[in-house]
Length: 125
Image 1 (cartoon, rainbow, N blue to C red):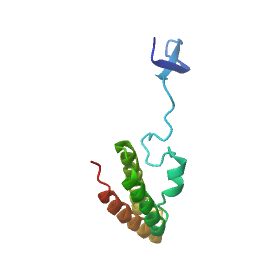
Image 2 (image 1 turned 90 degrees about the horizontal axis):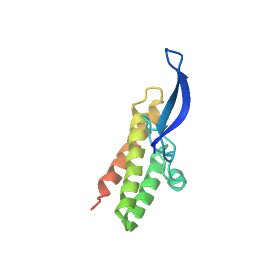
Image 3 (image 1 turned 30 degrees about the horizontal axis):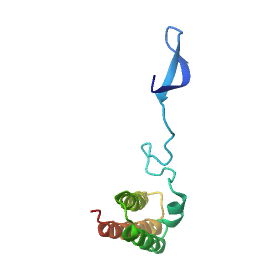
Image 4 (image 1 turned 60 degrees about the vertical axis):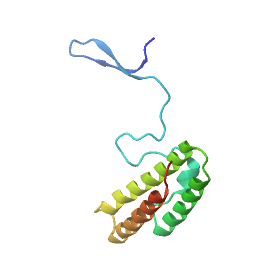
């Protein structure tokens, strides 16, 4: 049984019809394809996590840290820490973007600092 799925066809230089294949399996929602801004996996956390203002970031990290402390499984702790790291990385990209206003870049730098402090407090053992 082949683990590849035909997703289309093309014609080669000898005018033969050839298949375009891809690996079979579930579509992976929220998995990056060489971009940092991909769709969220969790609707709940996408509504909680904020990078637009430092106040929103403080609120988000407070909730993340509370959930991290309550988490019983390592996988949930990893997931929460990953959400914080992604938020920090996205804010860092915004802080370096020259097309964004200086005030927004300064806010993004504060957001990076807030998330970095939260990540340092998230120790997975």
